[in-house]
Image (cartoon, rainbow, N blue to C red; front, side, top):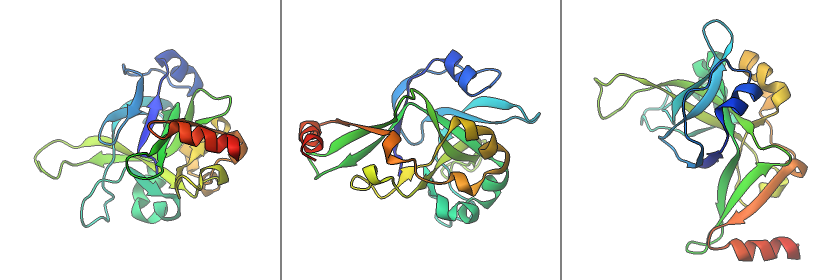
Length: 209
């Protein structure tokens, strides 16, 4: 899954790399968490790309429990989020994402990046989020990140990873949501940096193996 990620970039670079007209004011964030607002890129009404801030996590229409999902599995995206998958796809800019491994108390936090890339994008969907505690509140726009099976390098850390879309495929994802893009990133382009209480153990393990 993807439960935390970084976005440490300037508006100007985001504007250039994602070919958007404007980027809303936001602060670079090294620890974005569910329910927080983050930057996403989607098609505007005129068919051009736009960058907007959205809440992370919303419940699929079919969910009886109305529990928000921050991730959706690629295998079921066309069922659980059928309407959003058909017409409300987005890109979620990121600098890195985080996963945890190890036992409670000595867990290692891993920062996962793409080699040679300071900025990349997850495949995402967006829709409107309704506050279940306040049915009279106005809905807000929200997004979820699509996950897939992990690359070999991540398999011992977690059984899922976010779908990362190559910049050459941004337009294809936004235009038609090709399922061919819902695949794991090759291990050779992934970099892992151990952080947290188990970081030194993890570094030694990497050297030993």
